[in-house]
Length: 348
Ligand SMILES: [Zn+2]
Image 1: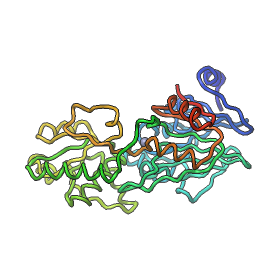
Image 2: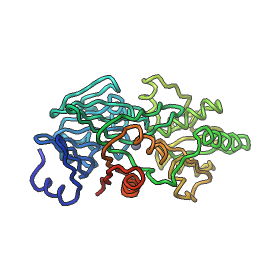
Image 3: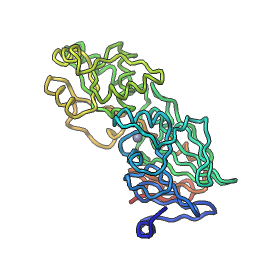
Image 4: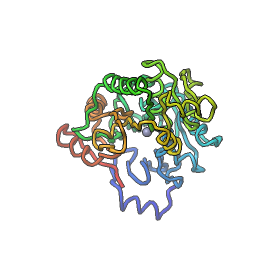
């Protein structure tokens, strides 16, 4: 249950939207309040306020809820990825199998749908009689070399990822970005140099590895953090051709600059830099920030860009949109002004 003090602080800082079955707040993540029950969705603290916790995917800024003692639900792959990264076995999490299960919790039906962001990432659809609400989690509507696109879900209320919810943020075609990356890596390797990409151990690392494996037919040097995550991907049918830095072959590749590297840990990245690797980053933020400390940067994102977000809203046809993430306020204003849909930013 929600304690009195915390409950009032929710009222102090958060927007309240009333309807028949639930209210939506932001308080250390998203709070969905029902008359006698509450959900915390992707809480940012282990002190999650809700009676039940939902975790959309395994990226570090979404997994604090796994440390709570309260009951929780996540896709079975998200649970596996969390366990692989932390070495901690979860015994109190309900695994959901994407698009094949419906759970009833606190009087609501909950469906889990792919959000296209990383392996196992989920959207949650809440249903009660004829009312519906969707939480997209981190979202991508575009197919990548390792993920299928998310499908918009029709709903009355929509809570949508607004990381790139600014009209200037339009990504180039993914195949063009892939080609730019491959051409740059190929020209470096042919001149006897090698690149090192810094990447999230889940999602971005596997996309870069698959790209270099498939388009360039080269092995990729990886660190231990990525190796642990790759095992989960491989159990789901992915095949990667990698060399681990901690092996003799990996160490030789590092010293000779003979393979492109994708590293997740700062220590491995610095080691590659010390051995003459050229530094690269692949992220959508390159549209905004210059990344001057890198030799190359590529606008490759696992989030939806602005046109994708608008496309989602048009297909979902919600009566109200809640925005969360980096551009939440600006995006909410844009939706209200340009789409004529009631819109509220959920922010601290
Ligand atoms: Zn994420």
